[in-house]
Length: 237
Image (cartoon, rainbow, N blue to C red; front, side, top):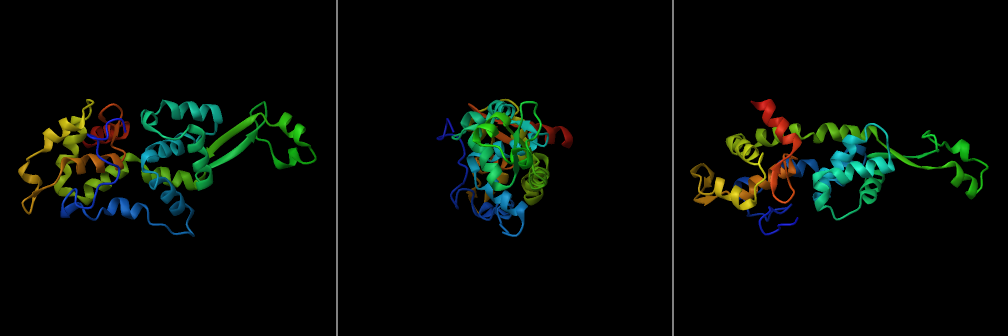
């Protein structure tokens, strides 16, 4: 992140939020892995990539309609979160292919899929002449994870898990419909009596961290409410 001193880390130290938030069931349950379940495998792949998690989710969402490599790379480059990415678009695409979230196709010059039968008997030069590029489409496994990771679903799960803090989560979402730095969020929540537990305050950074993990807010030269977060606010009115 461009502002690591002010932005909440992707993973908070165990004591950062006080006892209430030590056991983050929303995230822990999301990364439990059953090797026999392809959705579980892909879930772990995506959730373990904290810096790129929302980008990977958006790629799976947007590739439900088959996309050429160049088209998908352009889409990724336009994601606000990609400005903070440390990997290229192609790397992220291949990461999802290996994880079972995307199917990779070879395509001919007319955009049709090249089959193995069409390549049979051709030498390397003939295959190079036949194959013009690559295209990608979200697998059934990826589509299942897209439904599960929809920000509205994750935000609702978060608020259901901590109903006593629902108003604070919504307040932060509304506050960040205008881009803010972390200091402004800290000032908004600091010293709230309702955030005191056993004489220890729950840090404002906890709310930022959890909303980011839910896909409700993101960092781009400041914290701001995501498209999914805005949709949740509109639906909750």
